[in-house]
Amino acid sequence: MNRSFVLRNPSILVFLALLAFFTLAVTALSEGFGVALISTSFVKTLGKTLCLALVAVAMDLVWGYCGILSLGHFAFFGLGGYMIGMWLMYERTRGIVEASLAEAPIPPTPQEVVDAIGNQIFGVVGSSEFPLVWAFADSLVLQLLLVVILPGLLALVFGWLAFRSRVTGVYLSILTQAMTLALSLYLFQNDSGLRGNNGLSGLQNLPGLDAVPQAVVSIWFLWASALALGLGYLLAAWLVSGKFGSVVRGIRDNEARVRFLGYSVESYKLVIFTLTAMIAGIAGALYYPQAGIINPAEIAPIASIYLAVWVAIGGRGRLYGAVIGAVFVSLVSTWFTGGQAPDVNLGFYTVKWVDWWLIVLGLSFVLVTLFAPKGIGGLFDLIAARRGPDRHGDDLGPDQGSLREKEAVE
Image (tube, rainbow, N blue to C red; front, side, top):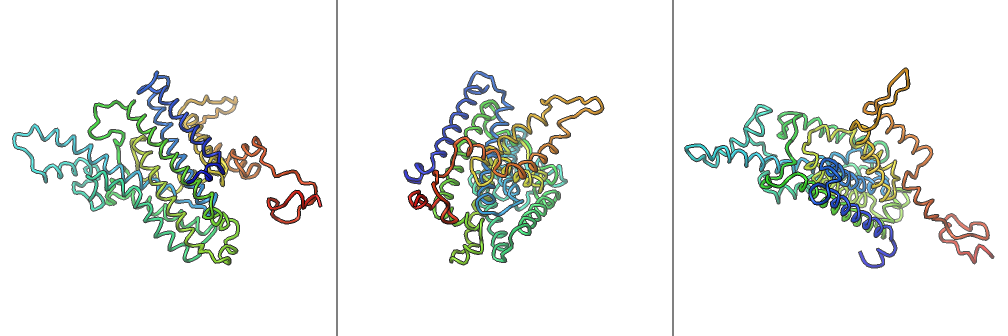
């Protein structure tokens, strides 16, 4: 990421500056560090929105730049949330159990403490023993590593099997959706080891920080989410700006030609697919402690479809478009489904936005696809007037950017 990279992409500095300004402004207006003009619940909403923007950037990399319409990236997002949620729930429960057992006349043995923790966590599904998947739940470092490793490993295995078979297009999208559905259905089972439909709850309570108010914790997570989004955006912009990005876009536009030129198309796809899965896992690990709960419904295929809709509305093939789409849809969805949007009385029927929001979202996706394929991000092209130099003659070839005005004049 040298100086020339930044100079070639001034929009990166603009994005990072806007992100920093937004973060500082929210901090100054928050209840935890500022003048209390923004509620703690809305600060959490904004923090979660930044996490959604990060997973949208990952989706734009794999779909907008590489042409792989993945309908499974929210599964990686959810896996990241489950990994950090296991540690949060274990440590939180351990603190409660140890505090209650400390009053016992006979000090409990370490095994008794573990059994009591297991009973508290898994009693809701009729069990008290820790499954194998919880083997590292007591280690924050290992669970943080799993936040990245597990989604990346799943993407690596799935991608290797799919790409080496040269599955493309709608068939690949169906396979990613099937993977997501299978994972979701597995997690719904009580014997999955992750409490089935109950999921993991109480994630907003950070172990050992009971005295710290949620107003302060919400700002900490806002800072972490903003930092992750900034670094993720910078990494994505660097990847697509050089030769790697040119090859990836070539795969999107004409995969057969790129393969004919000698590039290992499958390797490039696998790198993008795996890397974006890891980014999605990090986004999920930051999102669910702010949401407070995670369950298998979060990994359902419809969530990944929503993710594709966000990117399409924002403008795929533009990193800032993905961010705009995720932020716009997330905040508008919160407004419509949170009861803040007033109902519309048509006389013969009352439109309740809580019921109609998904229809509005679907209609917006259709309209954008038909009439504004560049999405909201395409508006910036009009504002910036990104046009080629004025030509005084006819184009001399298919690549207008390679024309010289002198040649056109002659």
